[in-house]
Image (cartoon, rainbow, N blue to C red; front, side, top):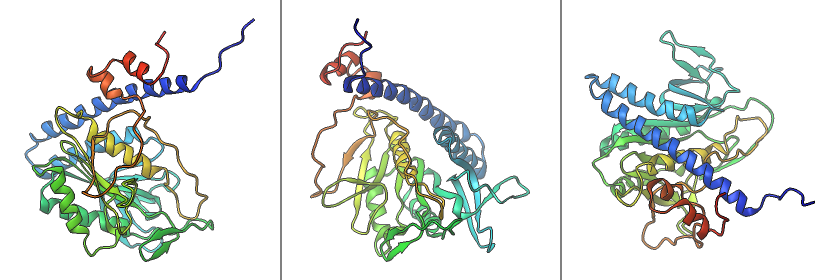
Length: 326
């Protein structure tokens, strides 16, 4: 009598492809929600109400994606022991193990810096001046010291030495821009000149343009956070060549990468697992001239091709050496 068949690598790849297709459809719905809120909030008539609604829309997406985190809209950051205040953040991904130490009369959470893992500045339309202002906000958020809550010591390398904690990581999200994504990357590099890498944003995402992050100049390998010699890596959204989900997918993927090192200072460090499966398009990667592309081709199943009809699921399985679906 023949026993049960053991799962093969092909089976695992097939399951990964199925997961990618499910996640892609979820991302499509979330992009529609963000674009719908951008249009609907334009009727508010007051800039603060408009900004609030658009921040809240991104908060809703991130809150659904990172359910193990405390995702807070318009959080105030204040050191619980010293009373030092570090301003308000549009959207914060914080640790549930360090709850807000108080609430304001308006109902907003006040978080200790120890809780704050990631901070996102949200903008409606990204121009040059708006970008520079947002980058300043991100730099201030990333420089806030995080006190240890325990005795476990950790060293995180910086341009001037190290700090005993994983710093808060920040970035910018915008709905629209009249600037090309390459121009945004150039303005970003301009802003970083003369500043330590600890102040540089980890990402800049524009929903209708793409995602800018960093890569190593010698290898072209993407970096979750920059070092002083890092150069920009553009994940470009091109209408007709990439799907409208690409910028949001790139943002979620990057936040997922940062989440793998989320850590409350003074506690044991445990590396997190990725949330998104492989096989969802993040845009066309563009590196500066002279920066190599890492060797190797992507062999993952591409959910975007299946969903858009550019390639059938059966054909993609055949190309990857997988058995036909039963």
